[in-house]
Image (cartoon, rainbow, N blue to C red; front, side, top):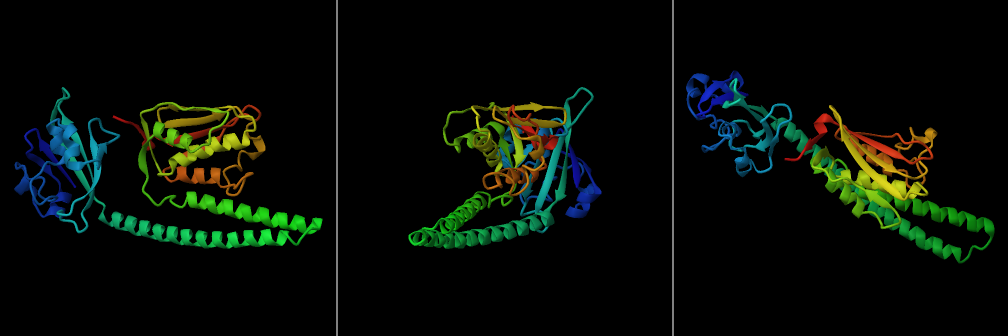
Length: 341
């Protein structure tokens, strides 16, 4: 659906799709300022109105944070909003607006488009409900398993009072180690049970780095993180990715004293690297380190980091030189990052 207004907010163009949607013919509405009518019960400014008035600073008064700058056309905006008074049952719309300029670059009008995404939103809500139910089931199951493991720990302690021969002691040690390993893996699933539950959001890169550093225990190492106005579109658990990379370097780098985060923007991508001065990763292990269960601790950290990033099309790989430190490179596609205003 699409309409165009001039500098005086009069409708110049009203396409067939919006005619069908609204039941308002082009001949009826062209020349009027009633372009708000199919979407709202009372007259109010549309996104196109702010553009022709060159009054974008007041967009948030009507749309809050539901409207952002669009990436492809200079001066354009986009948003998603529930419009309860719209003709469509459900009333969810993705909408965009862009200025129309004359040959001198002056704004002489604006075009606004709408796409009814009500059915998509229904499916999204159903998926979110399913994920929440699975989350609840996971939480209950984990709680019950931890209770049973606590009982096993108590029984192990009692049995050690009666077993003194070396073979029996060795078996009990293996039982204890297995119990603790299961508890660590359950703890990891608790940290990541929100993975994919919430919709991805735009997150300031510096804030993500600082959040990850705050989770680390202090130690004899330095972490250099850059300040940045760049935002990344990613799962809400993005800071866990960088925490895992920092913690992984400290735990397995053996001699790590310095971790450095860098980023660079190319024509198409944002490249973020996490570098350390540890022992690095052997060439033969690079292709396996992101597999589930691979590693010396729980084997989940790097695997889940990769899963978190892949939700929004971000990739990660290790490109360091063995013996000179690990270098993890995160590649964000062009549509997955932006600079804050």
